[in-house]
Image 1 (cartoon, rainbow, N blue to C red):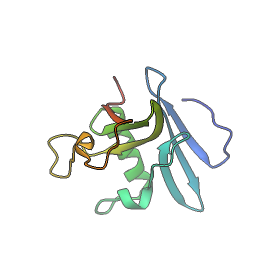
Image 2: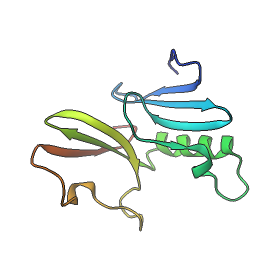
Image 3: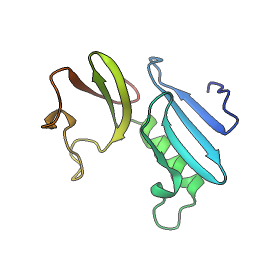
Image 4: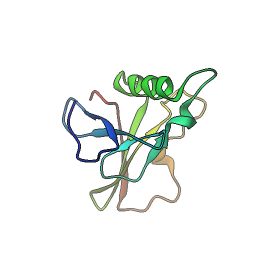
Length: 117
């Protein structure tokens, strides 16, 4: 686990290849999970299922990311990374192949990967 200068940051995870840094922050009782330096993020309260606490939901989500159950999508424009987000894995009824986006421009691309590549 790495250190982060943000005092609200409670967890920093670095992918085995060093390419990704997943941050978990907590401010005013709300958890936020996202990739360092990019806009996409989600909140702990959105992850809660049934009787789970936010802490349990966040822990389960992170565990699933680390085990490769969630797809990580890296969006590039002109070769530069624009955003990194989590998406439903192929085979899920909610999965939509990001490469099939009809609005994607010629200099835009997506890469799909798992935490462990």
